[in-house]
Image (cartoon, rainbow, N blue to C red; front, side):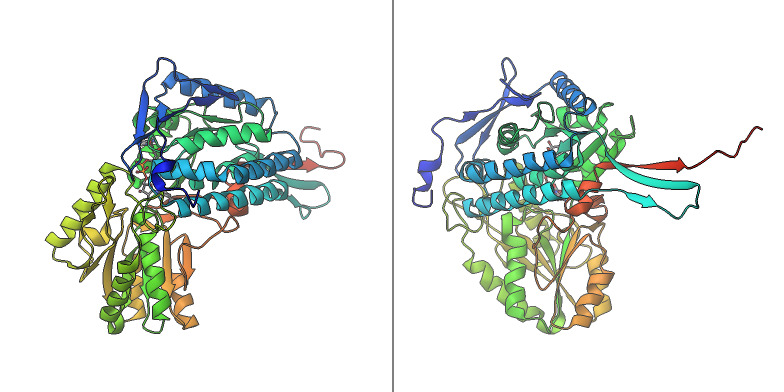
Length: 499
Ligand code: NAD
């Protein structure tokens, strides 16, 4: 694929998908389609069915049957693990195809999509081990007559709602863990990036996952998403998306008190001390906001930098931005691709205009780049940003970095914590006392020291404050999808209550 010209990889006709219920692909039939155009090229690439609420009900019923009859939830974990390992092999085999559809629908660079799919193989492999490592606890300290067990049971039918920024990666940070726990799934991908969620259905079926354990119902958030959050037969909802929709999920979940896992927005600080390796820090800061065009929940969008080096550091980041290769997502050399939707492009440009209007100093970027098609925005840096400005407070979800200087470590921590979010944070310093003090005091679920956006399936993901509830990945990510049961066992003859 590296040697083919980018236009060669564009489909001549959009690929038409069905949705997936009870082990079978269901063709759209009379249902209308979403037609998705590649954000980088403007050509139609996929057609995705707009499912109905009745389709959702059928999918939930299939997931319920599959859960209750024990075809997955009650088999030995070694058998679950072998399905997950086979799925990892199939993803590896189909990696080029999955990466291509990911790029065509999302606009991310093909090299990045490939790396993400490769990462997903590793997540499935890790989750296979986690399935077998999952266990409960025993209490042998209750006296001679009482023995206690704590067991973990799969929570049941899990509804899974995902966003468009990492359609396959975010899916794979959840699906193998949910399956490892023994649950069954009804997934609803973002309406603009559904292809790879549907391809995963083929992968899991080939890997031997029993019918009904992974279902995909495609459609809009306001119909299928909302209906899933309200559904009385969904035991848990794992939602990844914006904080505003997350709030609606909390309200909608009250009907049956379904458990919620919420992975929401962020306004993540990058704290740079004067004693950092500033060359490394500038590279990391540019990567932290440029990667995936800043459309990451964990993008480092606030640069909190020690005042004595602030201007020099701005120049270093600006120089890095100038060298970033923005362009056609299908070009293997591209580092930053297209903005995923026209609406998101509009949101980012509106924030850039607000930053200017509120008096921030535009250091670089701030404009759209014209490649003849698609939406592209130059990496943008604003200096002299004050805490009350919209570009300091709101999640922009684009390549826009706001610089705020500090004088003391206390001030750096206070600025970092001055947000409703608490998803991720980074600190750059060669002084271990400073770096660890900041890591311990900043309220965020993921923390990086002298790096950013690093990770793997071993370490959990999730947020403090309005960035969400619960954790994904790691052994925590399997436990999240279990219920705990206490079992009390009395030994010997009972002391009578009534004699
Ligand atoms: P979004 O909230 O608009 O949509 C996310 C998903 O929710 C989509 O599948 C959408 O169809 C669905 N949805 C929309 N309205 C709904 C409703 N009323 N009920 C139920 N579902 C509904 O988010 P987005 O624009 O797709 O993604 C960007 C947002 O996601 C950003 O805020 C970003 O920070 C967040 N995000 C968070 C994480 C994380 O792990 N914390 C990861 C990626 C993205």
